[in-house]
Length: 385
Image 1 (tube, one colour):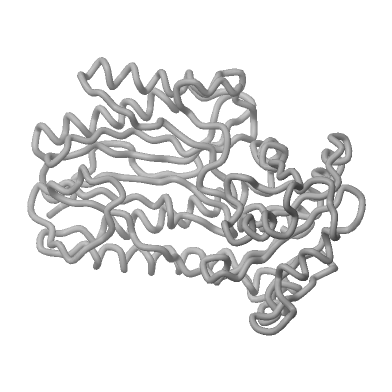
Image 2 (spheres, helix red, strand yellow):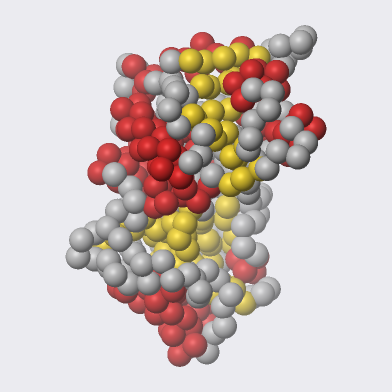
């Protein structure tokens, strides 16, 4: 992982040199992980930024809280790790200014994701200095995954498969949603642990699956991104599991969704779910090098229209060290697919207050088509009871 991160940074530095960009400031956790190989567990939500400064020529610099600096130094390949303190005069702003200098000509940042606390600091400390966006430069690099990255994502797919199997086995009439969420966390954590050692860089990687389980059941199934509750399953209930904020490993994220039905499935619910499955499969069948991203979405949209449904649902999104990267599988995105791109591809229909149809998988574009990164039956799924 660290060798990959170092190579990416060298590639970025060469690109910055070509573009005349002297220095860029990275604050997004996914970008720091991609380039420096480490990430934090408290992070900016606590007003405590970790920052990576990449110079086109000189060695990069990490700026991180003192209390986490030992772990950060052990996790990253970057040699210069500067610290700041939560109290006193040694602030993160002072440390950052020491790296950038008193009068930079311009500051390159990740404009869409820079925390307000950091952007406000730039505005106050460097009034009038142009703030420019480095995100497109790094984004192009992140579009194509290396064989190493694809292998990590395949491992994440196996973890996700264990999670979905546990979700499936937890479903029975009278059981509660949160019990399924607990089963998912345990199964995923145990599977992730099988890919890890307690040596070197890996000793800092937790196998624990976390975040609140996205799931809906019964008439609430149409409420997208609802969290697990104490609701009890009833016979013929549709139950939807989304792992899009949980299926990840070594910072690589996947999209993965399935819909189940408790004991039996009503005809109307079956029609909706089968339309979602068919739309997703039509989209995936379109994926190959040379196809535009919007063509994949069009294949799904044709199925929705044919079955009498309307959807504003995005067909897919690029995935990697972030949940949403570029390009997206939607109308208007003319990016041409290339081998090594990875996507979460969904089928989705909502009928408010009634039911929904949902399915999602992650895939990688190959030289001739695609391969699945996630695997679970792509059929109408009805539990034993």
